[in-house]
Image (cartoon, rainbow, N blue to C red; front, side):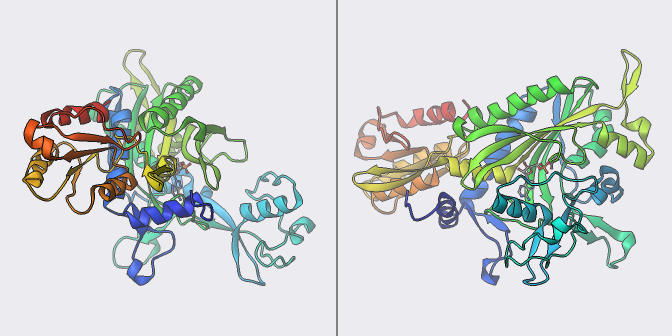
Length: 470
Ligand code: GAP
């Protein structure tokens, strides 16, 4: 790889050039850390979401899906603890006017001194702002000491208004996680299904957080998509359930999505890292160019959320599960799996990026799993004459209803192959003069560059099915 550029820069440039991910509203100069998905990106994102849905919902008899609204009743967020607890303490430098999260400030100071960040105190802060230690902290930007304001709690939820009048009574929040819609819908889902614990409710959808330090491309943005599943279980079965889902989720990323094993690991949350709702939490981390970081969390949320919704809605009975066999009524416990679609997509792009040498030239290739590749195949007539385009279109038409295939007749064949390598297209089928004679085509494998036996045109569809539905 070009040494002078980091892998991250290379991916950001490739994503924009090839239409995977690009800055939003670019003609107006963009808006910080907001991105759009282009023609290749939307295919990759949809395929990843579909694979997750297939793995989590369609292939399991005890998990169903929903698609809830983004704006929930505002009491939801009081009950969930997000109004009080979903905050980041913020610090300003009076001198240079920079703004930091208290966490980042302390991490910076600790790194400079080679010491650990002090643990969080009961009030949610690491240090007492009136203490002499606090006064000695340097501003990470200008280095001055004694210029930092005391931390102020900043809620990460986006507030907006329903109706034309900006009054307190009509203010609502954009959801910062999709999970709460599942909890509040759960009694209705139970009424319309015959589920019994353990059972799950899944959803994929947008979530919004007014992040103070978004960055690293699509890793941390203010608007993103989550793929979440809430598993309702009998109290006391949390530990085995967590183990089950840890294994299942890791299998999904390794085997179904093809992320390399050496780039994946678990991280167990220490007591300081736990979200306000979690009793224990395990992250699945990817080795991003900026370090190991989480892209999915598996959390033991206990009965925290349902208990709080029972209290705030007064609908305790509705939220309890009635076991008609034991005649017992109880609040289920929840184990949640919560993945970021965009973050996972970034991990997949980074993991797929390869450079090799072909005929003395550097070849850029995205080794995406055929299940995820935006185009499953490209159909290329060798030349634009002799009836080859017509034959190639015939093949294209036989595939297009089932697969996203790309037809390309322009330019030299080597260049056309390279374009498909960069897009991650796993197979190219070339229609040549022999096709006119015996109905066979060449198949070029993106990763090995092999061109094994020529399949018949009518065999191509099954060949792709074997790769994509494996
Ligand atoms: N319901 C639990 C929950 O939301 P979380 O660890 O805060 O847990 C889950 O978020 C996942 O959502 C993360 O692992 C990450 O992949 C994704 N995520 C969270 N904040 C994000 C952000 N600002 N930008 C992109 N993805 C984000």
